[in-house]
Image 1 (tube, rainbow, N blue to C red):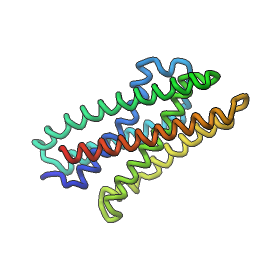
Image 2: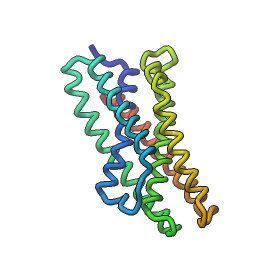
Image 3: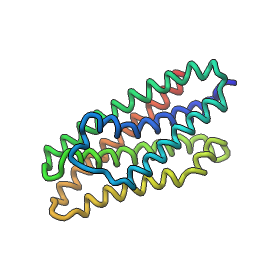
Image 4: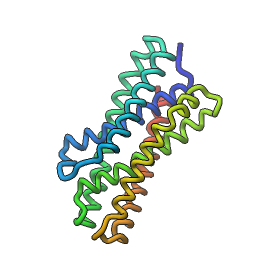
Length: 205
């Protein structure tokens, strides 16, 4: 049994969606969050969606591929996902440090958290576009829709985190909003890079 193009797209999209979440671990290992603590509710909804993405990837691999093909595809997917995690982490950290230089009253770790929230929102939007492209009658699209609440929980949690920053007292709202606009533009670019990586992996697999 060999994966169809739609199944490959869904497999790589799910794997690369999962790769967006270990970015937190990667950055934490670099000491990026030493100066702040993250909302446990936000962390929990992210972990739940990350688990879903990992399980969904395994489901596709073991349901739609023979062992021989699986042994070829899986190592490639893992290596690509790991590279994406590091790339996105480095880009997000760079943006956070720039924002901190522009507005030091908010520490770099908090700027990084907000940049990461923008990034997650961008990736989830791109994931949705990819899966929507499969068509409403596609079984994999239906699997996504059955779990859409997990995605909505992360979207709502990220939007809440960003709104808390914008409502914070004793900040220059104009300056902060301008920097958030820049972060969002950066996140959109990274989201498009994420989609390009998925499509490239599908083409070359």
